[in-house]
Length: 57
Picture 1 (cartoon, one colour):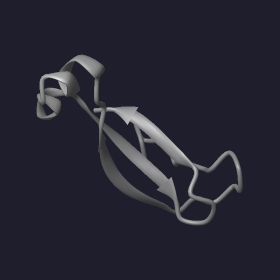
Picture 2: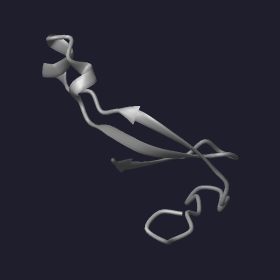
Picture 3: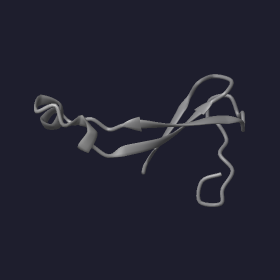
Picture 4: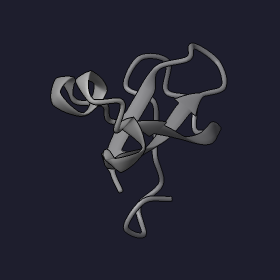
């Protein structure tokens, strides 16, 4: 559920997802080895076809 709405995969219509987080790296931060300072995204990966929903955290 995201904002009280059930996620449904637009590719395969599955409603089961695996939640994970991903780092939103930028070129400048990576250049100076400051990747830890970048923002994160909340991701939901479809358990059937692996389509990924990305939400800025």
